[in-house]
Length: 423
Image (cartoon, rainbow, N blue to C red):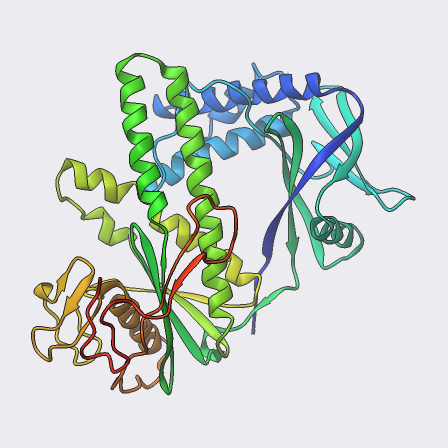
């Protein structure tokens, strides 16, 4: 068994009993100024090691809080340079920005005699907010355990406004939580992430246990809609509206990705000792060049973000994750191994050699699972048949976490994996 520190974010509302929300609101506006200045200096080529002290000289915040906000801004710049999923941060946004602080430096927590969790937040130098936290019983229970147990460590927190309500988001780490070693797995779950769905295949030594395709077309649709709106307001010179739209898009996409990632982990838990396997997409996406419009679509789709959300949620269930080379996973026939670009045509896969037909994304997830099995040094089982493809579509409003429409079969799919066609 391998032991890894696992971090979970707990969300609470602030019942402020000493101090005022006006002080907190002013502090979050100051945090926005710190963030903007950090991004501006980074874009101008200032040495990143020199930025924290340079920004702190003019910030009217607790020094620890300033350092944490600067660190998050530089982290956003680093993600932009490393992954295509993260656009270049803006240094012209207005409005509030979360106050980040270390435990027992910028904020503190304690248990009251009544069993509540009290907070003390340093909003500005020598100006504090005090009160108690309100939130779900599950999150309060975890935080109360963390305050009393040596197995838990309380880390950084963010104070922010959400729908005009003051909130505190606390990171807690369970230092004793274990993630099963990959080599101890009994099932490999191959995950193929696409711009409008994710395909899953569970593969064991006995063959393919089950497959599932989760549709989420609303992410692609909403990204295009917000892109069109931002383009229009940019042309009209309304930068403030542009920033608002960008923030709404980020929140929408993040919410959907969390829901889909929870579904992936929940489905994987159905199988014996699963290991979730992803494609390592970074090198592949670095070489994407399909023209301006297609490049924009592909480089801005949240492939890596969905993989990240799924990976850390899986860790909290003790499920390990692994990464494989994505080469030819969408072109290879999972039945006979014949690999050719012409095998795939959008969502339809038809092998030019053996004639096997399938949903192309399901086929790719099978190939990912096979590569995962090879990486774990298992014997690859013979794939003489594939289960019927089942598809689910998440509700576009995001009001529920469960699928709202389930198709036991999709037009023309066959259980023997040789005759079915994709829709």
